[in-house]
Length: 275
Ligand SMILES: NC(=O)c1ccc[n+]([C@@H]2O[C@H](COP(=O)([O-])OP(=O)(O)OC[C@H]3O[C@@H](n4cnc5c(N)ncnc54)[C@H](OP(=O)(O)O)[C@@H]3O)[C@@H](O)[C@H]2O)c1
Image (cartoon, rainbow, N blue to C red; front, side, top):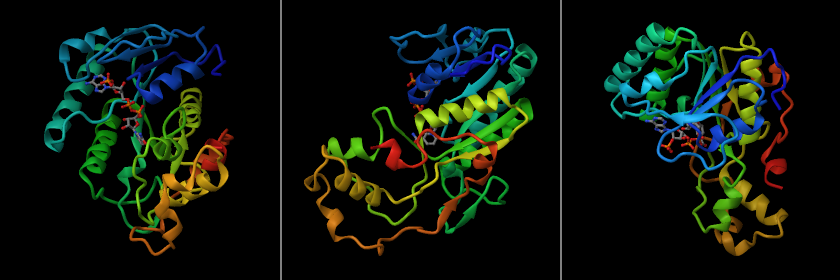
């Protein structure tokens, strides 16, 4: 739990999968709040209100009291120029109309790093090689002009009903690739974000990835071997694989900075998170 009474309030933009878990980690004695978009949340553990990031008329709904914003909403437009313009408009509006909301934690993704082998750190110089990576990078850059910004580049978020175990159970395909998948349990991601709220000076950008990246098929095979509720029939192909699948088995996202922050992960690897 987030228990420091002197800690700033938190305003969660987007009460989706992560946003809902974040609310569970907050101390409700603070004046924290969250926003919903399509459907109001049924369980209201903190004050919530409607907010549409795409609609300028909706921005005035944001409170005028100080809070650290946590932006969980993904890029809205697929066209980089249009998204740049939209973000600049919002940033300008926020600076003029909500100067109390100047601290922002942006939930980005490790998908910004190129799909090439190498060790990728927060300080690496690179260009994104996918449209979604480009949109994320430009969002990080533009937001930094308008806010006191901390970026969390999250790996694949799992836990609470999401992950390879749930894919196996529901008969969804398991990606057949040797690419390392870097993951983070949703509760650990929430705790990393709240650590940054409490310690704004600790990092301007951090990769949120756990201690053991593995290709999806290896996680699936481990699950079948270790969980009684999962069977070989759910992933019959796994028996045939060696490590010769196509992909980028040496693309490593560094977790050194995260480890230096001193946060002990509740789920250091998928083994604890999916046990
Ligand atoms: N899933 C992963 O493995 C992963 C990995 C790395 C990073 N991420 C990123 O991390 C962030 C949090 O992930 P998540 O799984 O919690 O995502 P999520 O469940 O899709 O939550 C995103 C939230 O943004 C809201 N939203 C969308 N458009 C909006 C708009 N125009 N105005 C206001 N709110 C809007 C959504 O509300 P509605 O649903 O009501 O529209 C939803 O509550 C996302 O940006 C995601 O892309 C995800």
